[in-house]
Amino acid sequence: MTYFHIYSFILAALPLLLGFLFIWFGKKLWNNAAKKNEEYQQRYTGHTTLRVIRVEKNEWEETNSNEQGPESRISVTSYTPVYEYTVNGQRYEYHTRIGSSIDQYPIGKEYPGYYNPKNPADVTETLNDITGGGNRFFSLLFFGIGVLAIIFALIRISAVITIL
Image (cartoon, rainbow, N blue to C red; front, side, top):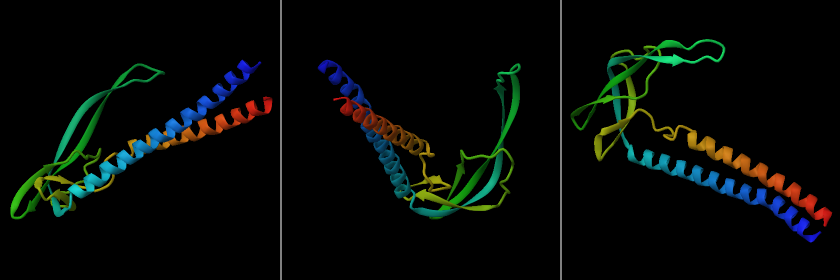
């Protein structure tokens, strides 16, 4: 009968170990995202004005697969602004990767920009989180799974202890 109790206790303690492992990994992801964002914000300390000089229209087709019917091809259009900015009398051009499905960038419109003083050609429109929330989402997901696993393990352990 003692082997059964040991086996039951190990099965109950395993989710506890996994829970702590998930929480540790979630914390590691969170800290890594925070470190990358901090490095990003420290790199772009110069301020400039980005002025829209033209808008590039990009068109492509995608396959839209539908479970209820046949696949269809859809046309996708994206508008991305091209900016001009000046640092220490030197003029630069910046082709952004951020676009929109509608043309919302009037020529001549100005926006704040941030550049790397060590390399003024390195510029960005925003100092928001660069990780896109993906790492933060997964770290919170790992935290949640870890907490649930620990709660489950504690319930199982208490059940095993009452059997003993």
